[in-house]
Length: 459
Image (tube, rainbow, N blue to C red; front, side, top):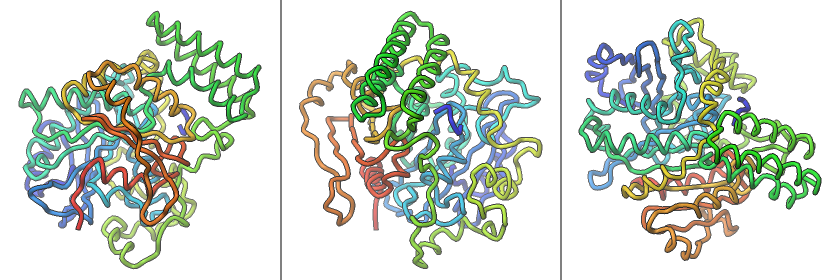
């Protein structure tokens, strides 16, 4: 989490909005396949967005094609970089087509949020303009959505699904509530399809309490390590209870160090691996070479792959090299990813604050909430997620608990790839064989899941 630490728009609308409300959009291809730009969400605070129109888009008036807004974790990680090129976008870090891209099920809107993440920036390095809370981050995102959606009829008729990973889930909850209120008040024109929480940091207390027992059970911690972990987790629990969130964040860092030391550097994103071994980046072995796949994504390739900058497949090199050149509007002195630590520090006081009540509010308002979790994740473990779900006060939670899970399969594969269950507007997916980065570890079943969530029309 702390480590490695739209919207396609009609040309006419783009030209109008470029000079209105702080929105700056530089390019839209004639077929509307992608667009990107900045929105000044507050004076001197600029948020970057990048939207891909799906080549698989099906026009069906009775079932509009969905749009996914992807929110990265951190806080301070870049959705435009990580979510896009390492997880679900059309191209990987070698700029080769990704066969498992979520464009097969929806349009994709990536943002660098909060401001200071990725390509988003504040003018004159005014760090006091960084947000201090999830609610402030959600307000900025709501402003961005207003600029992108309100003036485009085609866009605001498509259901928007807010999909978040890791810490992004906390912000997604606040954003879902903000979007709902803004739509109700007439300030925002869009249809909210749902909020999707992937391995999300909703209840820090439940997660840290799960770490010791989980790692002891899978033999990464011995009993002494378990005792040390449980002791620090209990300290965090008390600090959270006393609203000592900055202190809880500091103890959380201490707990991570203890676990790393006593487990011989277990990977917090996948307990089967050692630290720094998680396969966040998709390799070329996952890419199918059929001509149809290349053709589908050639609109995003242009002449990018002719650059020597992509040979290594390194995300930092890619984002500060060929991608920055392609986008043209990134400030010359801005280095992608440099300010992520400042974003985390600014939000230190909110980092350990739980957001369970916000999930309850979403459910009570009738908003679809989907939770998915990778079996092998540690930092946002499945057992920790199940613990906070049991704390929900939503009126349907008791009936939800009684529902039997159904197995998940992928295409013609008979192997069990996960489980799922739903009651009313609450849905849960258990993804087997995956760590923190579900779309990377289990791309096939993740894509199937997204299709079920968005109900995207298919040919």
